[in-house]
Image 1 (cartoon, helix red, strand yellow):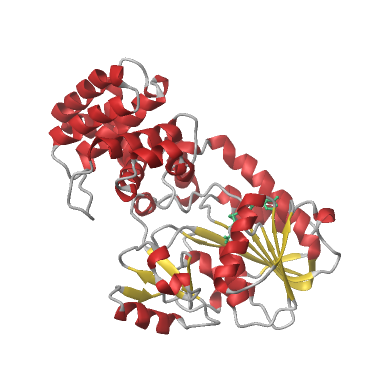
Image 2 (tube, rainbow, N blue to C red):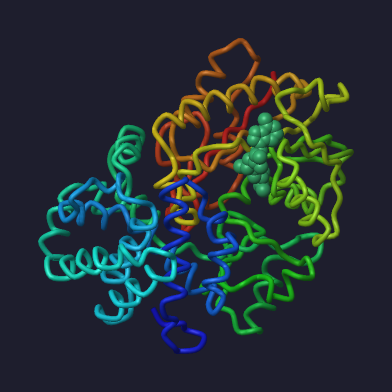
Length: 450
Ligand SMILES: C[S@@+](CC[C@H](N)C(=O)[O-])C[C@H]1O[C@@H](n2cnc3c(N)ncnc32)[C@H](O)[C@@H]1O
C-alpha cells in the first residue's frame, strides 16, 4: 500500500502495526477501535496511522472470504493458528487480493512485519502460504465463492439470519456492508441550516449533497478528518449517519415536553434533541458506562449545549428517576450493530449467534422498565442499529401483544416524513437496510401510550 499523503511505500512497520491490530481482534476479541488505539499498534504505525487503519479495515472487511479460500492450504484449522500468525496471513492475503502494491512487495513487507512483531519463526510459513495463494488464487477463490457467505465475506450464521428475516434481496445489503461508508454530517440547526452548511462546505472545496428525508443531514463524497473541519470544531455540525438522524423527527417533540434520552452515550442523539428548535421543559440523559458518559459531556460542550446527565443503569429506575413522567422517551438500545457493519467490520468476527438472544433480553428489559415512565398520550421511540428482527420487529410485536396499553404509531409517523425509503418488510416499526439510500441500517418503532 502506498501512503497517499507522501506517495511513498509505507513499509514493514505499518504492516506490523496492521497485523498486530488484526490479531488483537481475531485472538482476544478486542474491538477494532480498541486495537487501533493500542500503544504498540500506534507506535509501529506512527509513520502513517491512516495507512494502518486502511489495511486493518480492509483485511477485516474482506477477510472471511480470504480465510475460506486459504483454509485448504493450512495443516491446522484457521481458528487453531496463533492470533499473530492469523493477523499476518490475513494482512498478506488482503494485500495480494485487494491491495495496490505489486505481489512481491505485498509478500516481502508482510514477512518483514513478522520479524517486527516477534514472529520471525513464522516468517517462512507466512511466506510459503502467501506464495502458494498467489499461484492458486483463481481456483481457491472460485471454490470459496461458490458459497454466498464466503463470496460476500460474512459469517454463515449471519447470512442465515439475514435470509430468514429478509428472504430475497440480501445481496445488496451484504455488498453495502463491505463498502467504505460515506461521511454524513448533521447541521446544528440552532446555528445553521443544512443548506447553508452545504454551501459553506462546497465553497471550501468539498463535494456535498443534502439528504432527501433527514432535514439536517448532508453527505460528504470524500470523508475527511473532521478534527480539521472548522465547522465541526466550532460546533456547527456533528458526525452522524442520516439514518440515525430520524430519531428526532420521529419523536415529534413540542414546547414544554420533558424528554428522556435513555442509553445516551456518546451523545450523538442527545445533541440532536437539544439542537431541535423546541423549548423543552427538560432533557434527562441516562448512560451506565461512566467513561462513555464523559463523551456525552465533551460532545455537548463542543455544541454549546447542556443536558441533565445521570450515570446509571436506565432499567433500575429507582436509582435515578424522580417520579415525574416523560412526554417523550428515546430508547436507543445496545444491539448487535448488524446495521453498521460497513463502519465496524470487526462485528463480522466478534459477534456470535448466541449474542442475539442475550441482547434481545436486555432490550426487552429496558423497554419494560422505561415504559411506565411515559406520560399517558406520550411517545416512546425504540431505536436500534441492528437489522435482525429478533432485536426489532419481533421484539416490538411481543411488547405490543402484552398488556401495556402500547399502540404502534410508526406508520402514521413515517407517513409525515417525505421521501423515506420504502420499508423493506412488514412492521411493526420501520427498518432501513444498509445501503438503501447510502445510510446505515436502522430500526425505529414509535409507540404511544393510550
Ligand atoms: C446504541 S448506544 C447509544 C448511542 C447514543 N444514543 C447516540 O446516539 O450517540 C447504546 C448505549 O447504551 C448504553 N447502555 C447499555 N445498557 C444500558 C443500561 N442498562 N442503562 C444505561 N445505558 C446503557 C451503552 O453503554 C451505550 O453507550
